Image 1 (cartoon, rainbow, N blue to C red):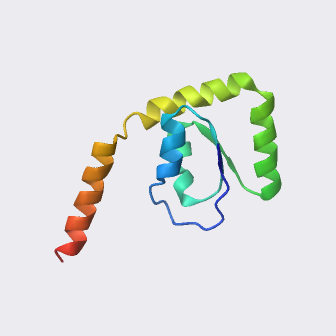
Image 2 (tube, helix red, strand yellow):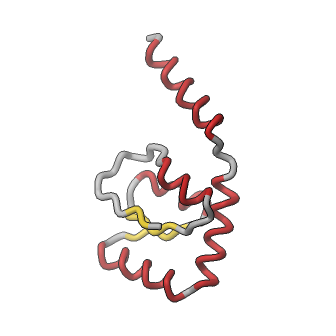
Length: 100
């Protein structure tokens, strides 16, 4: 899966990346804050430049063993995030800011 975002939201939770990981799909991302999930899970590749982004895509295409390895790591990482756990964390955030 590709996550070519150019705007950095400074580490917010990306549902899109979580969905990719939970499905066991390796991810190639730009160097944005949301990519912390790829570093934590070791389930994707983070590119520092446009050229590097393309090179990482090509390397995944040419290496099925790496795709499988990253996919398994992603699935393991993504499985800890259920819709119920995500809803609870959003609820906590909303309660904190709406009651100030």
